Image (cartoon, rainbow over all chains, first blue to last red; front, top):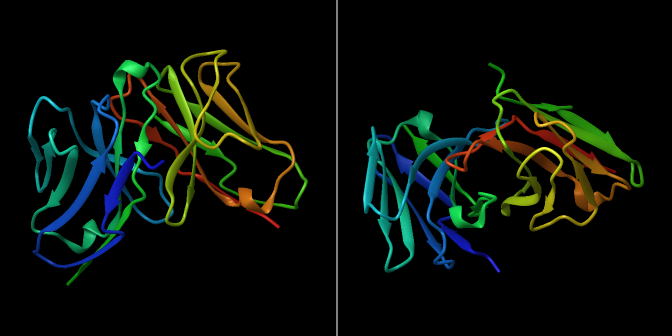
Length: 114
Length: 111
């Protein structure tokens, strides 16, 4: 049972465009939703995260939109740059579980073309 | 500040051989995790630890064992490697769950 579904699998965006990656979750106990960015040959790195008490969080060109009723959240990358080309993972966890184990989506490979 | 260090970075094993992957963190984090990453599968949790001396099974624990004898180290063992264990293994640590710090990974090939 896949608890976090991520789409699309791959995404090609022109430089300066908006990249949008979507995730949906099933477990209503999830209360922390981070996004990770991974470059080839590297480990994932935390990009931005949100909790359900807000509907949107913005950090620079990166924005998370969160829809609690639909159990969906998305990552928007504004003014996408070639340096943003990477694989992006959404994730979720329940702080009440005590172990903080993250459940990851399957990833989206983003390519930003000049 | 090294963060999370994984050794080795690459390894080729023959089927049936054993090995241990080492993860060390210098951030005094309580929580540590082992994930495997396979193409199209995302990151799947193998085992985790919520503190020194504790371990627990994740989503895909079969064929692996772990130990956390010291707070800073989390070891992942393969007793009898199988080709299905060919993967990239990532260790991560966390203080309270508000974001993991990942290591750079170990690329393991079992032939």
